[in-house]
Image (tube, rainbow, N blue to C red; front, side, top):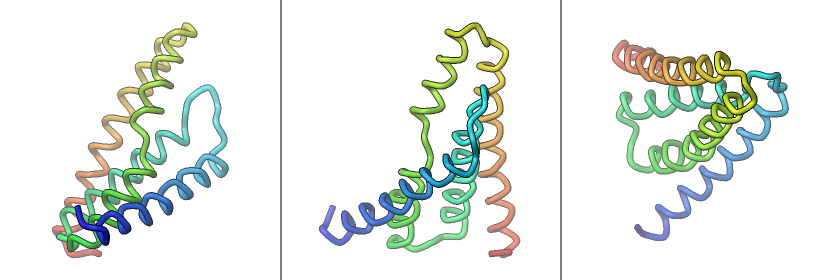
Length: 120
């Protein structure tokens, strides 16, 4: 990886991390980890849109790898799902897993359709 590519990923990562933080502030947590769900679905849509709209390599590095990579959070999703199960909230844990996966896959599907329709 060349220096410019690394700088693009780093700059995008900073933007994505800040956006992730602000979603956490704006979407208060309840027993169900809503902010993690929000960033995973939004990030899946954004990455899908970039990919299916054939964004150039620069945009994919900046926004795809950098911003979406820092914005979305599989590790938090996994941890929160296990935490819910350990605390006896097995139905919430299962719901969290299902909603995150279906929501994220669905968001990629919507991005695919949106890019195919040239809406963006």
